[in-house]
Image (tube, rainbow, N blue to C red; front, side, top):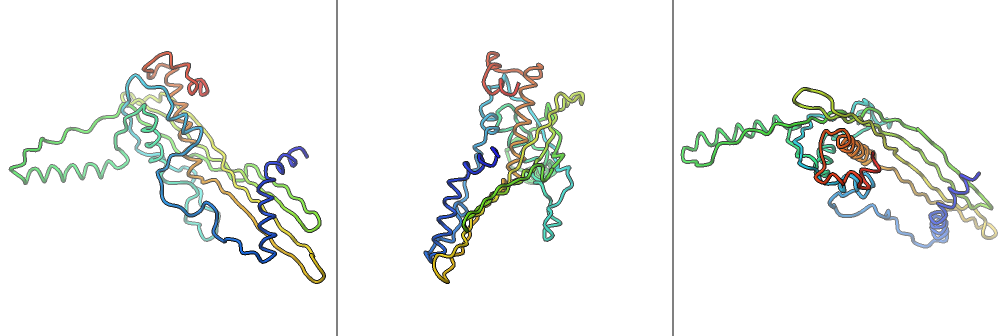
Length: 283
């Protein structure tokens, strides 16, 4: 009972908006059909999430580590449940790019290109062939590719649906509302490998919940003799699974960096930063 009361208090302001919208629509008042917050221009993606803030606020390292990512796959093998989307995978197939971005944002690693290594090698061959044919070219030869010190491996290992479901509703004198929610969960494993001997230095498993919720309000009431007011409105929110994967990977990376500092795998520029709020939370 306490949970239901808390749920209704949290949603009271939105429910009031829904009731107002349904009343206006029932009275014939024009209500905009344009979804709020849907249309907008493209913008630079800078997630304002706790894990992203932790990742970008890590203490400075003693020196950046050369790292490589060859693959970070979706290992769940799951497809979307919709009948019209049975050939579409449930999870993002770009997790390797997400991990590379997280490595760069952390400022702890210099990442060398390995996911598109074949394209890089092809372009270098074209470059050499062009210089060979141009006898007057004074451009120095291409330097060798940088070798990585560590490899990052792993993948998305699980996507669990309906981990938690629930809802609440009430109706009084033809005025009612309800809320339903569903929680899914995505799990990733990230490990760092020493290139020199193949030893796995650290491995971390993290998970992130994905929330979907729906709120409905409706009116069914006789306002006068033979005059029936009937209206309904609803709102739903589905947390993007791609954002959940990003947060899980970012959290795993921060955990790996923190454990690596604790175990002497890499060092801080200022040893006193071991007591920084970010590392303190993760250690």
